[in-house]
Image (cartoon, rainbow over all chains, first blue to last red; front, side):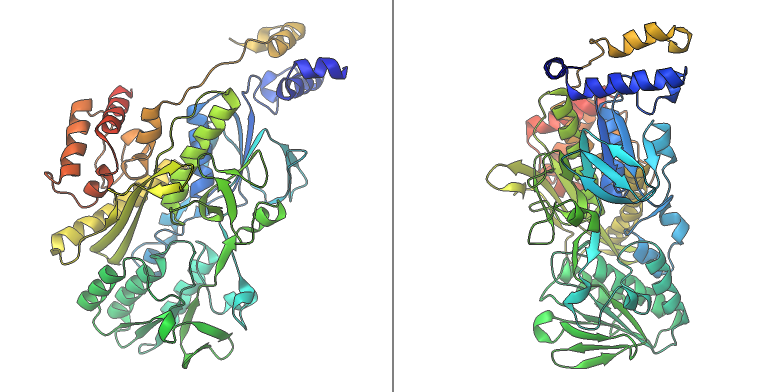
Length: 433
Length: 101
C-alpha cells in the first residue's frame, strides 16, 4: 500500500484490515479473530488491582465495542484493604481474594502474565510469556514498589523475616503466622514510612486490629509504633479509640521524638532509632514507597519516584498515549488508596473513551472514603469529594469531606464499622464484579 | 447478524467498510453518579450493608442528598459527601439513577 493511501485511512483501520485479511485466509471463523472485528480501539491495562480492574470494567461499560485487555499476573487478587482484618483474625484470606470471571464475562481479555516492558514509540507491551500486545491507549496501574535502600539493613530478602505486609498476599499470611506464633507478653513493632505512601490510615488500623487480636489471645503483649512522621491520618480518632478499647496496649512514637527508624537488624530483630534501640518479637517494617517497577521501565516516573499525569485524564505528562492511575500516579489532593484508584479508574476510562471517539469529556468528579476499623464494632472514616482545575489539578471541594466526629456514642461507631464492611463488599464488586 | 454464514469476500467487505463507527458520549450525570458506586455498588446495587440506591426515584435521591447536605437528616458519612455537590449536580445524579434500567 502506498504511503499516500495510508494517510487517508487511520492506522487503526489499516491494522484492522491487515489482521482481518490475514486471519480470514487461515480461519473461517470470525470468532477466531484475536481482535474484536468492529472494535473502536485497543486498550491494554497493566495491573488488575482497584485502579486497573475498575478502569477495564468502566471502559467496557462506556463503550462495549472497545477491545480491552487486562494484564495481571495473579489469577486472584488479594486486596490490601481488609488485610488488617485478616491479621486481626476477623476475616480469612479467601474473603479478601477476588478473581476476574466477571471481567471475562464482559468480554475483557484477561492475560495472566507480567508486563516486562513498554515501547511507547511502537505502542506495545512485552510480556514475560514472550507475547507482545499492541495498543492504541495504555493504562498503567502498577501500584507500589519499595525503597529498600532508604534505611540501612533493609532489603527485599529481609522482608521474609520482618514482613511489610503492604501488598495483600504472601506477606499478609507471613505476618499473620508470626503473630499467631508469638508468645504472650511479646512486643510487636509497626514502623510506618514517611509520606506519601499507600493507605495513610492503614498502619494505625493495623495497630488497632492487632491490639484486638492480642487482647483476646495474648493480653500481656504490647504494640509499639515507631513512626517516621510527626502526625498521622485520623490521629485523634484512633487515639481516642485506643484509649477506650485497648488502654495501655499501644504506644506511638512520633518521628520528631525518636520514632524514625535509621537502621534495621532483622537477624537481631532490632530496630535502631535516633534515641533508642528496640528489640521486638514481631516487626512489621513498612518501607518508604515509589511507583511500581514497570512505571520506571517505561519512563513514566519523575524525580519524586511517582508518575506525573494530566490530572483530568491521567495521561502521562512524560509519555503521550499512556495513562497512569492509582497509587503510582501523582493525583493532586487525592490520597493513595484503593478507593481513590477506583475513582481514578472511572475518570480515566471516560477520558480514554472520549479521546478515542473524539467526543467531549464531562468535567471529572472524584471521590474518596477511607474507613478504618479501630475494633470489630468500632469504625471511623475520612472522606472527600474532589474536582479538577487547570491551576490546582485535583483539589478537594472545600465544603466537602472531613473525618468522623470525636466523642460520639457507641451506636455511631458501630454503624461506621458496619458500613466499613459494606463498603468493602461494594467496592470489590464495583471493581472486580 | 451471524457473520459465519457469509462468504469470505462479503465478510471481508463488511469488516473494512467504513460506517461501523459509532459515537459514545459520556454524560455529566454518569460522571458524577459513578462516584457513588464505590460505596453503593455499581449502578447503585449494593451487595452489602450500605443501602442500595438503584431503582430510587429522582425525587427521593435529590431530597435525600439535600437533607444530608443541610444536616437535616442524620448521617455518618453522607453529609461529608453531599456537601461536595451543587443543586444542579444533585439533579444530574438523581436523574441519572432514576433513568437506569
